[in-house]
Picture: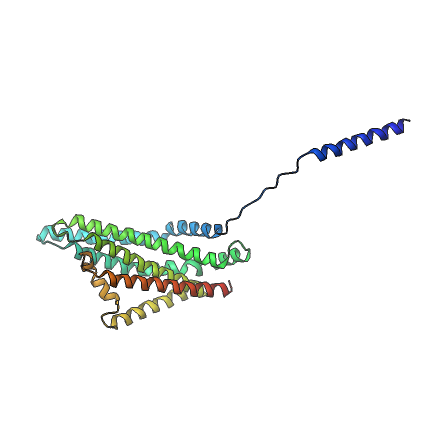
Length: 281
């Protein structure tokens, strides 16, 4: 009789346990939403921060600022000693020309080394499926383009503002002309950075990519210098900066130059996406 009572007690406990389990609510299902552009945004932010804090970028900005300050101080001294009235547009054009040509070497290195110097990182990120090849390529390219464009735009703005303040006796700089010069030079350097990232992605080493890019830049610049007048030669355009700063320019002409530069960057980007997607990392 005690055995039957124990069996009935065990049955009642298991039954009540099942009924209690049936009455409990099912566990909540946690849904995680994955944003498809999150890897691109993460690489973009990381590359912007690391490049801006890198020694090459900081050295570039420091050398340009020191060089421009020294040039303007020398011109102020000449003006005070000799009593010469110097044109702010002419001096700012000379400073912008030197800053632009001096920045080409740094921009080439920064852009080509964006992907070619990170082969191990690319392999780990792509093979682990953390980010697609297209997103990685575009994030690196956009980071270098944004950083170079904004940095040189700030440098150009500072040069023009300092020249206008220091040489007020002949302050002949137009606001619209200054905006055109700042936008055009910053756009050209950004295009140089965009094409450089493409070459870095398609070549196997940073040294090879930099060498090829310098040959292309020098060869293309030489051909444009030998081209007739309607073509935008680099030497002619840099010489015209003084007139553009004074407001004497053709909006249609520089609009075509800007559209051509953007078209070159887009064409290079498409080639880079196709080539990098098929390249062994």
